Image (cartoon, rainbow, N blue to C red; front, top):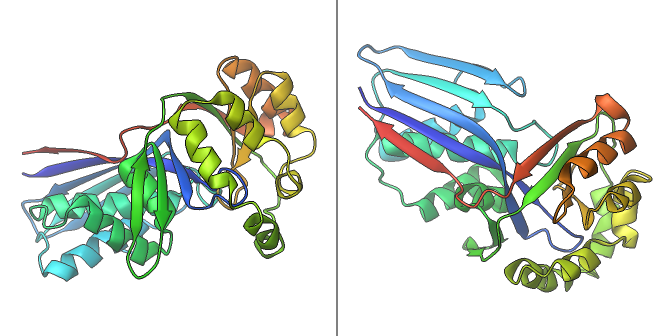
Amino acid sequence: MLKVKVSVPASCVGLVPGADMLGLALGLHDTLEFSIRADTQFVIETSGEGDYPASLRHPAMRAAVALFQRFEQAPAGFSVSIESRIPVGCGLGDLAALTVGGLVAANNLIGTPLKREQIAEMAAALTGQPAPVVTSLFGGLTATVAGDKLLFRRLDTSAQTLVLALPSELKKPDAKADRAVFAALAGRTALLIEAFRKNDMALLADLLRDTTAQAARLPSGLEAAARKAGALGVAWCGEGPALLAFATGNHRAIEAEMQRALGGTKARTWLVNLDTQGVSVSVSG
């Protein structure tokens, strides 16, 4: 029987104020496995992060059903196993990743009628989150502009290790209050692209340094602690509260300092690689 396994990375969008169009794919993945059954039953099992329902109301299943309906094709019976490693509702693109995973798996089950660019458009329409969708699909550093047509590009960047932190208690910033400040900083986007493209760590460090907007978003003392341990700077992921630190070395020490600054063992931290592949698919049977 046909079996499709899909791995989808997390995403960090909005790396500096004014750069909400940019996203980095992170080496933290959700894994989905769809298998056609010999009977007409639908069986779904879920594990890991979040409390998404093990039913057709799961985001991955909503996406899969939408694709089946679009082409008026669906297996008579199939099993689904979803392992979620991306924390939910913290700015790491969990909804986008699950939606992309559901669409890619369903697309492969019925003969791949959609190209990856079309999947990006469909996932963006389903989630209203075009930048995380594109980042999870294509990996690396991506730039996305949503309008009448979804425009995006995967940009050159070098592989690197990052420190990801998730505070146990941290209020999200007031996006409306920040918007005016972010608009004035939109020019940082071009420089950020250049820093990643040329692996210019000095420029990246300057871009990540405290701004009025960034200072209001980061927990007190966190950036100073991370920089003291060797970090180039700390960025807020999406609407947060997940935080991402960039560094050329000393990652374990930076991780320890960030965890300490965020309240010790109550905070969760990971060392993650920049995911340069995006969604990956294996088909068997």
